[in-house]
Image (cartoon, rainbow, N blue to C red; front, side):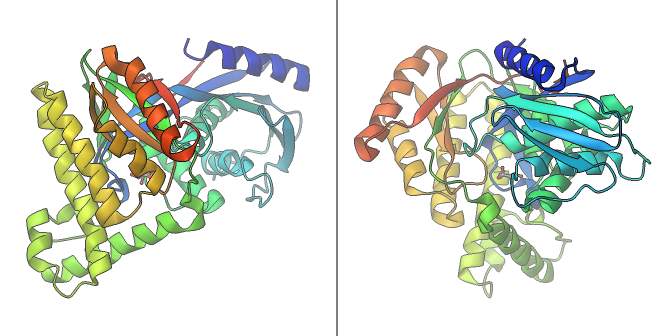
Length: 388
Ligand code: GLA
């Protein structure tokens, strides 16, 4: 089992804290976003993968209506009533669990509480979606505990609603879908209009490095929501100018953007060009992967980062430093920021035989500029969320 050590530590801590065995345990991984940035809520396309780091959630039914929840890493317990699940402004980690629990039990007349605990190994604020992993392992574990069955897309939407209503970020569905749909050695390619996904093999000549810059991840500070609003404004603008229906930027091509953008605020127009270009890159990337052209796919990753940097402006100096360094590291095929942006991590596509030397070269290049290395981990596309 992946992350067996984390599982063992969680069980030991659960037994000693609650004095009993958990009735259910579920696991959900974090994700990397490989190509297709800020396209999910624009109903476009994304290549992503579930990763070999994740979170376990253990639970059993409580004797009464009170829910007890422990963050295993912090060794902190919070309590709330099943009938009154509200967001908290202190210990905000509980909001991902509360929001998921509330969404899961809504309208089902659940009155019994749970004794829950979670523990994981996804670095927080790294852009690897520790929050979605927490939501999805919570959803699977508590769904099993209460006998509530929901399909994966509904489960992903419950997690997304927890982010919107409890954590304060209007994220798309990418993180939750990737955590659920991952397969060993495969990418997940999702069409976020139909929310239909497929697993696509990468082949043996590719692996990923994740370079965590530890720069601040500002998703909940409103930067993400502002970008989303700009995309929505642009979609409404193009809806009035194009002859075919436009509900989201997915409906606008790069050629149409260039022809019809006149009259749109230039900053908003630049923003819009990013997800539109990303959609085209994901579709081009799918063809390149079919042909086994990893170098071509990697170049699209570099192009994606450049589009983030110049058009969407969701990069930052630390991320740019890693991507620029990656261009000169032997064996590296592509690199780009992954996820919301404004900090977090760069995902690097590299041949497995060069992974070790490339990791050292990237860490050193970062240290040369900032005095300390970025944290580089090898990422293996892994199985998605499941009951243990
Ligand atoms: C964050 C969000 C996702 C997605 C990415 C950007 O990870 O949670 O929904 O929008 O940013 O692609």
